[in-house]
Length: 301
Image (cartoon, rainbow, N blue to C red; front, side, top):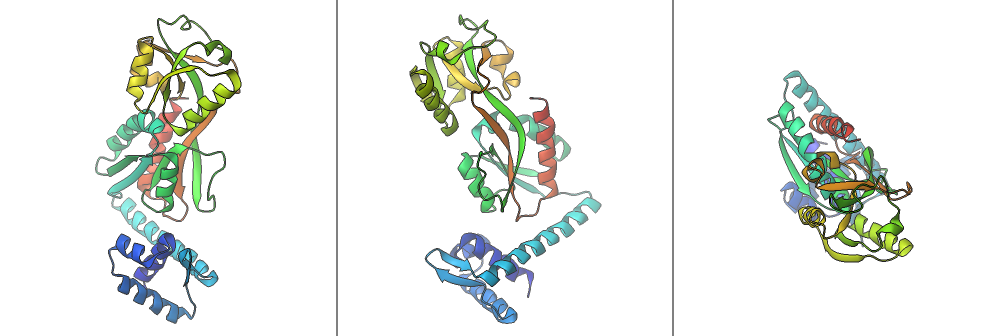
């Protein structure tokens, strides 16, 4: 038994395919098959079986694969221990983030992290929430930032932790008659023009809002938050926004845009946080990055 064999069975279990594992590990399919067959002979069990779902672990194989994850995690701990003694850290940190956190939380958190650890290369991708979870499950990233689902998927494999909660507010121009309001009721907005961020969570909120209070005139949907803010600042429409990070946004800092909370405190709120795989080693770089996220988000609450 060797480390490579354990790596191979972990990757085949994750991808449910020897060919996909071969591509991911840059090892020939024949090499992976021979290594797995050799391990099965040594242990006297079948680790995988073929099914309509692909190459899947047997019951005995599941136990071996779980133990393999534990072995690989211990190896990473040994490497990290050496890094701590030599004052070094992993050279790369992979992160995926939904746009809401990408635009509000990430910039200053990254600046804080890079100031402390300038030699760590950070690879960041902006993705949707489901894609972030998919990337974590498939070990494509170390940390995912997202709106945490109310029903968390695959909790046996994933660790979710909250960073902050955000509420929906109404954003209006400083010249709007509504700008001086301390709060507002949903029914008072029905005659206003609306511009909408074209994301699944916000679109679902808009649909629920229309169902409860009546439809508004939507000028357009867009993923471009700059266009939304400019349109509202020029008095063309209002928008719904999450209150997270507005205190650091130039439009709100300058007073061009004014956020107004809903009088109904039961309006939608979202929990924002991070997710990681329980099967992967929790690296020092990932832990330090999360610490920077926590430091920054504490200033936004």
